[in-house]
Length: 258
Image (cartoon, rainbow, N blue to C red; front, side):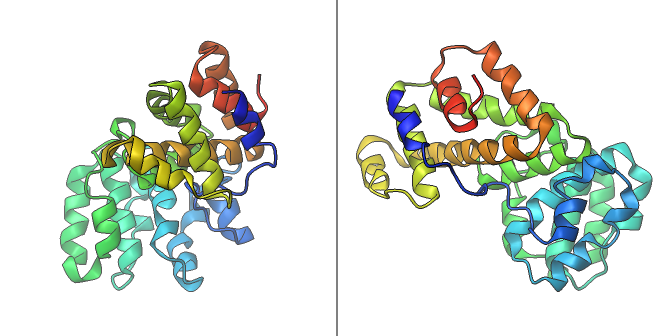
């Protein structure tokens, strides 16, 4: 794993998995919600996303944040429901309600919106989501976004640990897999793209897909460690608890945590 240090020597950019809108208002109300957790600040989050013309990728972190918020404050579900006509907001809201453990409520709102009021891409992305955030089994970048969003609700390291456990489950399979996953991460931020051809020769499609998601998890962790103390604390604890593993070597290289 020595070459991982070289791969990350130039640093990395913002997270591909943490697709949080970057306007000051939204970044404060979503990514840093835990610093000032007043639910009323989320009242206009969907309207702001719509007004800024955000595509579907901005919505999964919001669904994760609201999912955890609704679990803590179910009395706010109805007050944060978007109006019919905003299909992306409707699909994200329904996912949030279901992930909060209120599947029956989600069903009620689904009938209110109707199929023509929902976004087909987000419906597909959220289609396999369970009834609780804690039961998510990471398979896609959207799953990562949901967990990052949930972590922003309270600054909760348990969702970070879920992401780190997933990353480790892929990269600890072998040193080659760990190195190739690191190379994918570098490619994601503008580095050499020849790794993608190499992947086709070494792994089947399912394994390649898992490694791409693991690379996104590594990228997101590196970004969020620099922005959030609770992410740094959770990552530091993970590194200390799993010394010498391939996953920890990669995490140490990208975060600087030893």
